[in-house]
Length: 274
Image (cartoon, rainbow, N blue to C red):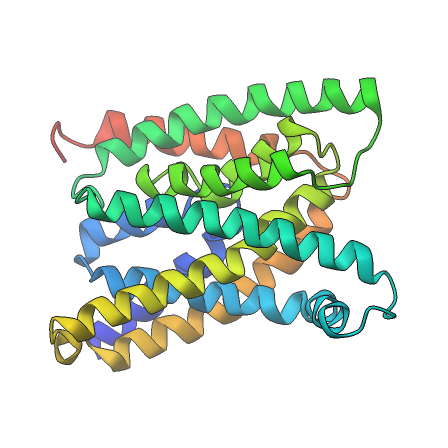
């Protein structure tokens, strides 16, 4: 029962933090520092639970994209197919880069200090990026389109966020899109969330296949993983709904301040090397 409660707590943490620009992986590593480490499959699979919430929230958009693939006469078919192509490009950039990182033997850090620094530096970067993005929006007006450059950079941003826990996948992708030409917060956020769907489901499948090849699936606590997956999906649904309303009238500055405060608190409080 104790393990299930921990799994429930970790699932809630994942669901709340996955799409807010504060780093879900960073928060999970911080929580696991005290609650006990979990497997790579656990950490990635519960992220897939959070992504399931995005599938439900954007189900109308996803259905329109599917119709456009099979019916050229569908409403806005050309634009939908163009969006699909750019999502595919962003995903392929992430997939190729992610596989390369895996081949190089990268693993998540076992200490919280790197996460704390990533939270601080990411917070500073968010404040600067927000100011630059706001200046560009005033200069060129609101741009809702997703260019090929934005698609490629979003794919690269996902790799960076995966290599440096604490960076935040949502923060990295949203702000790269804002700085690269999509000045609309809503459009940048939507593209960042949509590209996360194939990315996280593919990452979960990759980990499952890797464990199956090595015969390690039996060692996973599937009951705890299921509890965390469900908790992540439910809490992510609420968090994303809230965020989409929030960004219509607010900037991301509050999240940057939170990152700075949390990162500095961890650096000041934690003993060296932890």
